[in-house]
Each structure stands twice: as C-alpha cells, then as structure tokens.
Amino acid sequence: MDNAQLLKGVLEGCVLAVISEGETYGYQIISELEAAGFEDIGEGTLYPVLTRLDKNKMIQCRRAKSPLGPVRKYYSITPRGEEALSDLKARYKKITRSAEKLLYGEFDDKTEE
Amino acid sequence: MDNAQLLKGVLEGCVLAVISEGETYGYQIISELEAAGFEDIGEGTLYPVLTRLDKNKMIQCRRAKSPLGPVRKYYSITPRGEEALSDLKARYKKITRSAEKLLYGEFDDKTEE
DNA sequence: CAAGCTACTAAGCAATGCAAAGTAGTCAGG
DNA sequence: CCTGACTACTTTGCATTGCTTAGTAGCTTG
Image 1 (cartoon, each protein chain N blue to C red):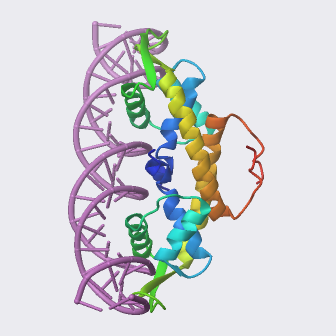
Image 2: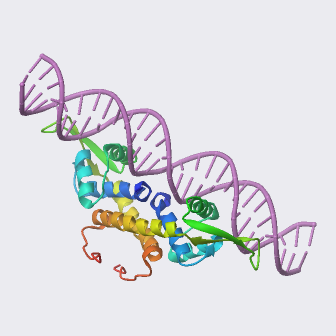
C-alpha cells in the first residue's frame, strides 16, 4: 500500500492545521495526526515538515522543558502560516471535488459554498 | 500556486477513472480532466502517466488512425486496472476524510457508507 | 550504570508531476 | 509546393516531498 503519494502536500497542510489549533510539539502532533486517521506517520516524516514550515515562516518555535524527557520545541502558527493554510484549504477542496467527480461520479451533495 | 504536490497519486487515479468509462486517448483525457476542474494538465504531465499505467498493465493500448491528425493511441482499462482503481478509491476516501477532519473541522456529514 | 521512554536530527532514496523541447501527421492559404 | 496551425505523442531532466534508517540526547527507574 503506497499512500505516500496521496499524502504529498496534504500532510503539510494537516500539520499546519493542527498547530493552528494551539501551540504544540512534534510528538503530540504525530498522535493527533494518528487520531485523525493517518497511519504510520513517523518522526522521520514529521520533523522535516516542521523544519520546512519553520524555515518558510509558517510557524515559529519556542523551546521549553518537558516534565518527562528532553527539551521540547513548541510550535505556533504565524500570520503567514494562517494565510497559507486557508489558501491550501481552498485549493485542496477544489482538487478533491474534481477528483471525486471523476472517481465516484457526479455527486452534487457537496455544494455547501 | 503549487498544486503539483496535492495532485500526486490522485491524478493517476483520475486518469484511470476516465479510461474506465470507455476507451479513449490522450488528448481527450486531458480535456476530460479539465472539464472535471483540473487546470493546466499538460501533455508532459499526462503521457508519462499513461506510459506508466500501460507498463504496469493497468491499461492496454490500441493504435488507430485519427480523422484529423496523426495516429491515436486508444487506451482501455484492464481487470488489474479496475482492481487498482477501486483500491485507490478506498484509500483516497480514507485519506481525504482524515485530512478534512483536520482542515475543516469535524463534520460527520460525510458518513454515506 | 544499563534499559527504556521521550524528543528531536540528519542523510539518502523513490515516486511523481511538470516544464521544455522535439517528432510527425493532416489540412488550409498563399 | 511551402508554410503555419492544429492534433497527437515522446523524451529528458528537474523539484518537491514523504519515507526509511540511524543517530543523539535528556530523563527516570531498577
């Protein structure tokens, strides 16, 4: 099962979405992604995403001690990140609509716009 | 706007879906994709997809003269392609559900299964 | 001090969409 | 006949991004 390709781009958006709901850190993001239904999102997958988002000023970082374990890096979303997120939401919606039209047939149930 | 990443994997599935509705050829597939809402699907994007699907025995090919222009390659889906398509549909649905949960919030409107 | 958990880092790979350029057939206009 | 426009497919090479694997390091417990 190769879901890797289907995740491209969306994963980054989902990470951004999780962070937009409140300051959080890597390990917790992974468990939220899995709670939402994503499987096998490893650390080697997530952390590069965080690094990239940080580098692109979509999120910002703050170090803080953890009650158990090494220092955590807490991330929060920036204004720029929120823009990017809402932009991505729109594009994702458009693409999934087109795809669903072709994949599942022409359902117009989704015209909630 | 970089929709390229969001298309990964789905595009291939959509092409397969188009072909599954009846024998067709490259140029026409492009216009069907655009009719469904995909923008700027160029030839350099589509034809490699067709080549790959053919190589993996998802589709089969037949050459036939065109009333206007060079020879066309008409593709039709194989049993194996249909399997792959229905598998992809299921995986795509699962992923988009998870993504939508995170991106747009927890709508349960989509429990039509 | 070793084991095991938490937490982040880093190197390298593979898949796929895309841009750009090319080949070729048909047909209309001059 | 030649040129340009349109149809139709091919090829090369690149960038992005998720994934695998391995590694570093702090903390707690026995």
